[in-house]
Length: 342
Image (tube, rainbow, N blue to C red; front, side, top):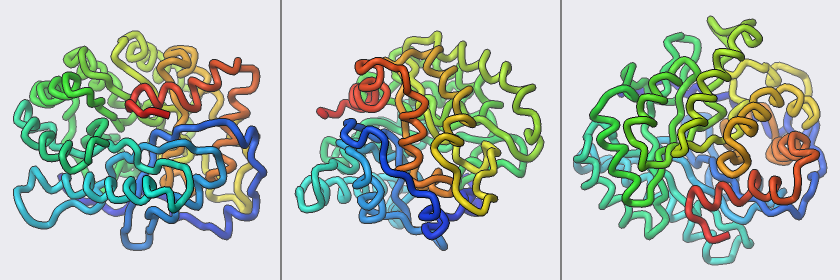
């Protein structure tokens, strides 16, 4: 996989501070099942940065998701991602000391393993599980490729069609027996390939990240109404498979195309909820609250919205839900998916 430039919006703390809201339902217990930690040119988001954000809500625990941080420089290439699991486990150990408050940061870790190894990925998983100190909960392998040079999924450029390759399905089938999930970050143009992968690994739980990778820039700009029914149809097919889950978030990414980052002041949670509602409500309708979970996708989504306002938008999207439904969306589904005792 070829490295590419950072595709995410820059974080502007001074801009975000122009419209920082008081939290809605501040006591609501939350598990944040999707965030990153990294140090890259012009982009720093490490333990204390995340700690500052989660302290604004009642976050019980978080799940670290791979982002190619701190890969090992030396040793076999297939074991390089073990360094990222070690890094995240270090952050978890800091949180577990209790010195930084009650939130169990990185209580679950989703690492990166080369799925083109097929069944041979098991030797990597053995090392990775040991490095995680019992915290490894899944794997994510970069496979997001839009086909449009204006829309980049991550800091690596994957080969096209990876999710439809039989060797990848062979690797994914090794995860289920270990109690590990597969997190998938793909674009809406790849949902057919994702469905193929889901069907080839029925015993592995597969999490559809970021409401299926909605796109709204480049060749997808101005086509939201046209493409929404196509996206919905493909998401419905995925939801019909019992081994899938869906994450509700990632909608503040530049690739989605809402463009809030271009405004003089940040969006309010009301504006965010209005923009995101069609996607979030459709996913909840298709998957149900028992298989859907809100996610922060920080610091990626922080290019458009603060942590406080993001969760306020999710609360606005949940007005009218029962107590049990809210608990599932904000805590229980994530805790069950990633085997967290919170």
